[in-house]
Length: 518
Image (cartoon, one colour):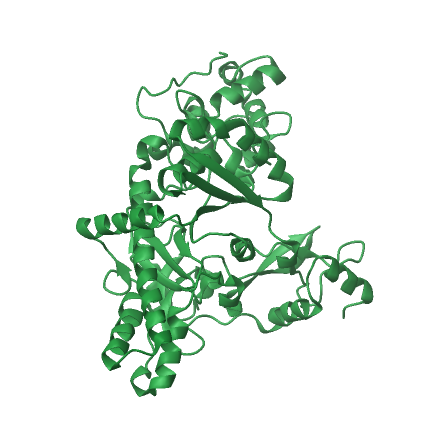
């Protein structure tokens, strides 16, 4: 099936023949659905902390940072913004020239309220000799959109989401990347430094570097802190082979194999390269202006405090097991921690011999740990928190996407649709073991949790393989704790009109809503 030329191509990408053959086999056999016990809830697996508990967690985090631990904020930022502008691209190619759909009317009626309004006015003036308002008056709507999306203008249709102007301030508009730098200064700083790592696509790396160069001094001065910014790209070795509908390798017009990015699950390799004791993970588009950052900062401190408190207990128990100086009462206490606090359960635990029990407890304790913020379900997209069965028959907390759930099982569908909470990608992770060594994170991936999707290239249908998602199957064998956080900590921007939501707008009177060239 694979020629020597194919093998050379595979090798050049840093992928083994064995891995490619495994992927081809995966297309044929598919991925199993997960067996579910229940949707996680306040009654089952989600912590709802009261004010005293929240304050205690914040104090734990402050104390932890005071001891010189290294903290990093990790932001997946490789996504292009093209999907944000799907409706506007549709308008550009539509047969009509004036706003027709509800989306189009909303966009054009509210142009003065977008943070990019002045930059857009500049481009319209440069390319058309007139500002936005004048062009709209002449009903040249498509000229305005072209200046927003196309290369001759702001090129927002091709830029990464992290470099678009999201929020307006009196001293200038900010990109999501800048908002993440500010967040890092507010809750992820340690040793008078804040470390922020962005995963970006290769073609956008120079743009990100330039933006950091232009703005970093401003934020370091504002928050009196050193901000260290680093970048990485998704590794070619994490790409997956594409196949035809009959599961034979899909070939490009020149006969070469087609490889596609493996999805955000590939970033487990990037995360594995991060040198840190604690890592915050948050999506690039989930940011708010300064006036609304209070809850975000508060609950990030809470999540981190819960993490270091539980990590400390796990470390103490591991050291106790190593010492051999434990009794039956100690083992019962550790079992309670594993079952109640970490929600890891095993049906036959009472039948295990002492040596087997200690081995089991050590394996459950000595793993990477994450605390995930979950918000009440109001119909927004996002993975759901579940109690799911692992391949060894144990039950643990997992974040699942709909693709991992058997839609033909009405009980499972009900769990997913009626789940009380969802995960907005709000994670705090501990990636060192109790001896200070880094866990090798790829060892904790459940490779049976990827999925297959239908795509096309050049008019030909193909099947693509998505790796286990970064916060789904890629962290399947981590210890997981769910904590309820307020909905106002989750404000993603999926379409350009989402920027018109009150959460992304300045307070009344903060900035002017005029295009300064008109």
